Image (cartoon, rainbow, N blue to C red; front, side, top):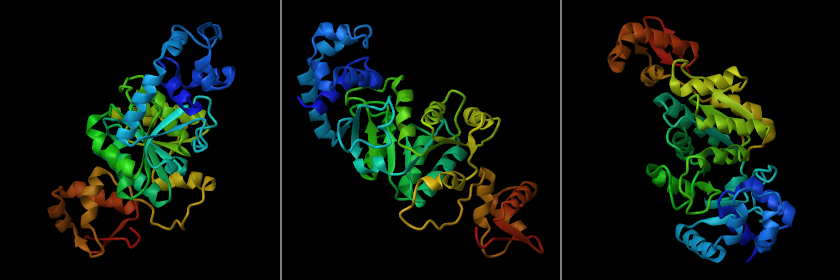
Length: 364
């Protein structure tokens, strides 16, 4: 058995976890030495609680490795351990970093410069649209996007990255033999071809509730900053933000409707001092000193529109259009429409011409 295989075994032993495994490695000198130690030595090392010593001593090591390698080969998964040279640099500095990473996809993208995008599973249309817009902008700026492959904001963030032909990383909270949520299996396969799907859990680990908050530390650690979009008061995205702060990373929050249950947490982050992200450039401008893009970053600022503004803006082009035509095309009443056109004028993306005509500004 190699040191890497010993780490796979320890990682799969019930009720150990990355922090305790790292303490065992420091105490015994290696994962191999942990597995070779007699039961009495394990039980008296003061690092194990409950039945942990018995779990290590009685674990079916050879059978587990044989089954695990068969699953990995079948599913196209590679494994990286803390003993390997290609273990991601961004993870190596934290004491709670995983000792094993199962990866389906491009291992190299784990070391790319990335931004985490997280938020509510029960996201609104506005939240999902914002997540896609931010993800596309980050990709255009030469960044990767990290998220958790959950429903809602996570899914939108991954899809936005893929739409922009960028690299996205999905960190899942279960083993690869138990995809969760099941409807995201096609998305997972797509990400594995255009980025990477990552798990610290052995292949047969089911999607246990307690594992999803724990995996969030990996999402923040792989990223230069974390952006929270539309998170409820008990959202796991807030846990990701907490991990980011503990890792000395910037946390941004996109403001949303104060009456929305799905945005109570993200709005509270702003109240508590998180940086406000009104657009992707607010994030990029803060972290630009920490990275150098591989190409010249020269694009228009990304435009964020409300649902109502999005209904009207496409009808206003470089050719003047009359207010009556906008009423007919959008299906909105004239009072609401005039409020929306005024808000678009304040964003400097359209302007009003004499005779109640509107035209899009050249830089919009």
